[in-house]
Image (tube, rainbow, N blue to C red; front, side):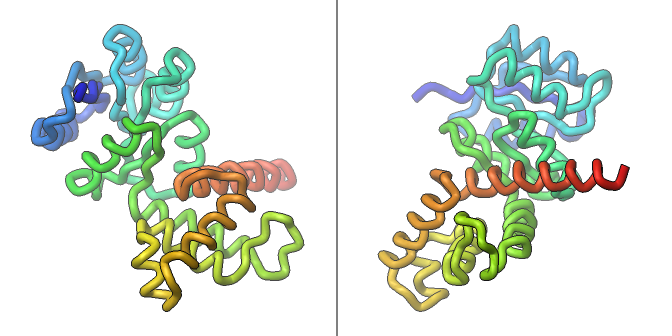
Length: 223
């Protein structure tokens, strides 16, 4: 199996050291370079062609969001995992819309980085547990049984969606809701069909895009 080539981009040596330590314990990861500014991250990404860039959101010369956008525009096959101390929904939306595949809170770095790396290297998205819960809770708040939208989910589908966003398996959800795993799978299929997505992370990403449009519209109305 080919190792996952990783570029680390962070202006703090302690964070880079921590990321190095975590990845060196992962036999599937290979660190190919490091960058201390956003511009260096873009340049080294083009030269080293990493599979994944681990990017701090706050970077000198060029912030992590714009650096992510440039890296993805230059090579869509390169995945980006953004590191941040912030669990702001608006920040998460900006990061995902810039093309990042992962968002990991620095407080969860030691526990979640390797999981995030494996997920995005397979072409999936990865959000820290807390971020997933924040976005799903907002989604649940904005979707009501009276919603006339064709994308409306039933109360049971909303329950299943919330548990899926927390990483629960069909068996675990079935035990929590006291239904069979097969019934959970049926609800999952209906949720994905109604929202035209193919995974829970796509569901969260779709919601973030919708919320972003609503936020921008509200800002225009205020101005």
